[in-house]
Image (cartoon, rainbow, N blue to C red; front, side, top):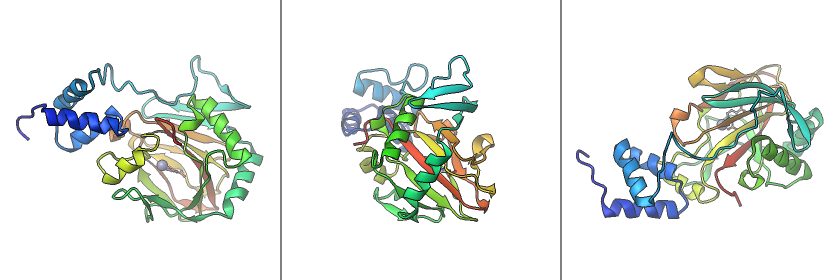
Length: 277
Ligand code: PD2
Ligand code: ZN
């Protein structure tokens, strides 16, 4: 594509994509994947949607805890949570005591009987499939399915200032020794055809909380290879990270390192940009 013109067809396509529920950021990303230059893509988006897409970087709202004034502890709905570590880019915050030991144990007990080999989203069709990159076993709760899920969901919503309705149901994973989750992004790749279907329900993922339900003897850290960060799994702790765009520039590539000794149990909460009904 040597000379790139903003045609009527291109503008119609942009309007159609956003009318179908895709965020301007997702359409932007799809245009870059198709070979449009950054400059033309942003100009076309702004013309088509009649608004500025970016002022100083992407203006999307994101889940974010109230850490102004650098508190060591913050109140979240019904519980005080410790702030153990925070990083600006990628945006990562490690919380301590998000869940009590009893809550961790109860969640494991509820999930255990429903475990099946973990599936990841099948990018071509939007369905799901067993994937060798993820050797854990897992299950999903419906949002609010159990009083414990509901309490945790409200706590998370208060902690990161994000509506309960924008959250997916909790996912629980069990990793046995040797099991791991290879580095990946949690957002849906807008260039994959299956993503269009997935994004209709709630839009993009914009944040993740990985809650540790036990402390394995060795291994099983959540890793962020772009910034060489490792978070050791510790019962009750939770690693939060957010991503304003479905793009590697967010540096939110992350994985679950192999468990060396013992089991690792986590509950993952994914946060969408819109209501996940
Ligand atoms: O269990 C983990 O540490 C982990 C790592 C990366 C979980 C997820 N991703 C996830 O559930 O998305
Ligand atoms: Zn992940």
